[in-house]
Amino acid sequence: GVTTNQQEGTTMTDTTPTATLVHLDPNTLHDHPSNVRDDLGDLDELTASIRQVGILEPLTVVPTDDGHHRIVTGHRRKAAAIAAGLTTVPCYERPDLGAASDQVLAMLIENLRRHDLTELEEARGYQQLLDLGLSATKIAKATGTPRTRVRDALAVTKSDTALCTATAHGLTLDQALVLTEFAGDDDALDTLTDAAVEDPDRLLHVASRIRQDRERQADYELLVAEHEAAGVTILEQPPERHHTKALGVPRVLDELIDGDDQVLDPDQHTTCPGHAVWIEKASSYYSPKPAYVCIDPQTYGHRNRYGTGGENKLPEEAKAERREVIENNKARRAAEPVRRDYIRTLLT
Image (cartoon, rainbow, N blue to C red; front, side, top):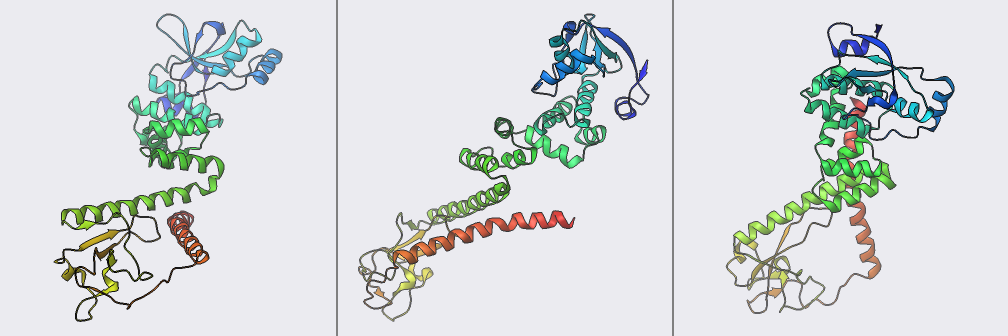
């Protein structure tokens, strides 16, 4: 027999396994149903090399109950040998690799050592081992892979949406891991996928922005639910601001005064038939806040705090500048957690 490398031997069994060198017809070798590789890739160069000098590294096979052999490692070599017209190929017969988990582990170790797998193929390999009964800790120890990487890979394989999207667009494991958080949000997935493909360096920032938008939307929905439960009328359109002198339309309370020239208090105004609230949707730098209003100040005896007022509308340039400031603030806020995570990792 031929002794295999020590790393592979110590992961499979407590004793050093032996392999019998045999020569087999490549056409009779069965591909492994759990092959961790999705695609054999371009075989032209390997076929030309085998045609010229033969197979330099034997395949690894296990005997099957029907008298044939199943490939554990060497699927590309088998396909190239058939293309090159070889009638036999050298194989190490490994009966000690009878367990399915040992076979998957052997395939994974060989390809990881050669950096021959895509990161997503690697993740699926870990999932196969998990399905066969190995824990994440045992997988990490057996493959020599950090446990955090195994954990992240398994998290990706648990999300079919993230895994399929990442596979279709050739994303890395780290990029696929970001997608798992947003697996139920098609719009977010589309946005994140575009960022990962077109501008990968911005992916974490885009994810942070979406995450914060979600938080603000949740805050908005909570405010709506609370005011509905309290029986407060919720306006569908924003109230008039101080640039108008009209009183027969909804106005915010802090722009109105009562008969004693006191600014209307939201708690005291709840008894007014015109009491209502405007809740701006989560779209600015800050989380949404309720703005209490009176839907008809003139009817209910309120006066304009600023006198007759008059038109005081912002010019279009000022409005555009304000929108830009708000957008920049949102981008800056989205970048903050990404920068903190980067510094924390760097310091660690």
